[in-house]
Image (cartoon, rainbow, N blue to C red; front, top):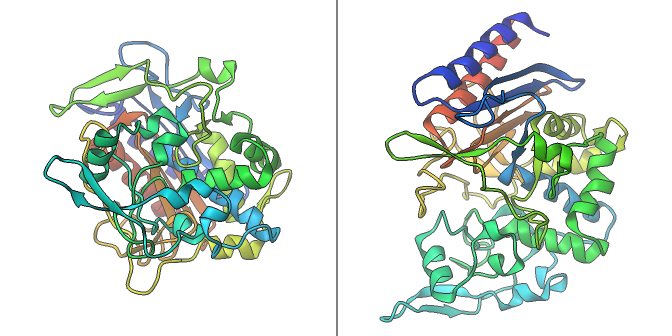
Length: 395
């Protein structure tokens, strides 16, 4: 282990949990192609209790689930079972019923029309179909309320049968796309998404502490999600757990895992698809997954909140141009933290962040359990942690 990195990163974790208004607990790890080069944990699993946050603490990893669903889709592409240009309705007919929102009438009822073309699997992979999330769109939230559509946290199929905010392919809008792709995988494999991932991703990578449903051992190590009020005060929400078992394995946000298990997935991408116990993807597939897939001139950016308790307004590295791959954000220029152009990253709602730098063979994951997204303490800690990793690599 790089002692300089250990010194810097331990200090960052300590400061993140000990500063006034800091995160209750954090786990952070960095890896090269062969193994972890840093592992650290600080703070507690739940404020007001004395259980320390540990390297094997289990977290709801929210949207960092998405990349794994992307891999399950690309495995089907490799096998020739799917093409990304296929209409999604071929595999999930219900998606053909989804309409484009055309405003609201005087009574507050949504007005909708049929889209001009079918949604393709590529639209779903790239978040260009037109779907959103209720916490990133006032219109999506208003439609859900008017039509009594459940929240995505209910982990039900009904929760993703919503509306398109624009025509497919028109622009990048982050939403429930990857949940639809999870249904495509299930249709093709004839199994629940969790079973498919278990056989085709988790086992070859030696991942144990991960799943849509927590094992008893995982449950005992679960870190509690906390809510940060506007005044900065943190409140533990011990009962906030995704449905166990879930009615639907949500490919967009449903997994629980330890940070250590996720590192194995990051290493697989760094190693061009090779895992500890077998190959997960071909090298050319990883290469294809790591490139911008958006049309020329289209970018992926930030978001505005429609439910401030779940997310702040935000954007990652706002000064840097960003695009989208299958299914990662790509920074098209070097970030201030030192991550080179063409690297991959994404995040999970409860302030979990990762990056994958295939050029240098380096990746990292910062795990915390705080709402709303882009928490001032936890996100700042992630940026400092990533910066420390790149500083430590300099001769």
